[in-house]
Amino acid sequence: MGTVTIGVSIAVPEPHGSKLQQLRAGFGDAAAHGIPTHVTLLPPTEVDGGALPAIEAHLAEVAARGRPFPMRLSGTGTFRPLSPVVYVQVVEGGAACSWLQKRIRDASGPVPRELQFPYHPHVTVAHGIDEAAMDRAYEELSDYEAQWPCTGFALYEQGADGVWRKLREFPFGSATVPPQAGRVEHDSVPTR
Image (cartoon, rainbow, N blue to C red; front, side, top):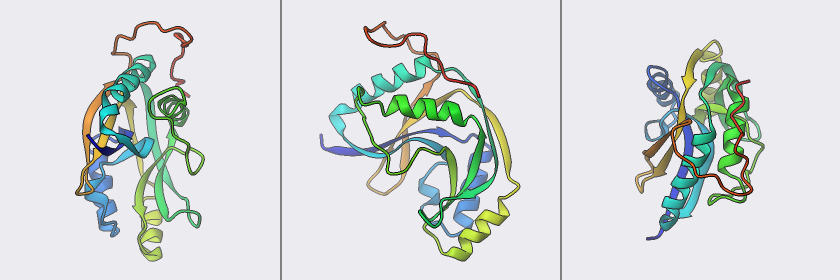
């Protein structure tokens, strides 16, 4: 079947998602229209296509243990000079995002993944563009605010054209998960 590149993220809902995507494109980020606006839980990861059913089962198990939580974005931040990124900050929901991403990437699961940098939930609004445009993104979105109830996450696949497409959504608390030895059954997503 070959390899595929996947990612797991929390979509930023409308009208916020398309507004931030349009702004990102307006700052000159050529990749903006191929990347739905999101908070990453699993960064782009190459996997064997035959592993997708096991990955989906794992994600369903993680989601089944999750609970809805409030997400709030406010203001901007940057990873410069370490990485050429300007982002909108996650100011509420970050602990829950961290909880989710740890379980998704767990070494005992089908997508164990070490991160290049410590996990920091955010919404990218400019990546790899010139410094003046990065500064503009940072300034123009410095007072940006959005909030919504996060009720799940989704699995995406990057196509040969570089566009990310949703494969499946995973709502919290919705899957039936059989008890498994050695698994913590009372684990829940922290809300703060």
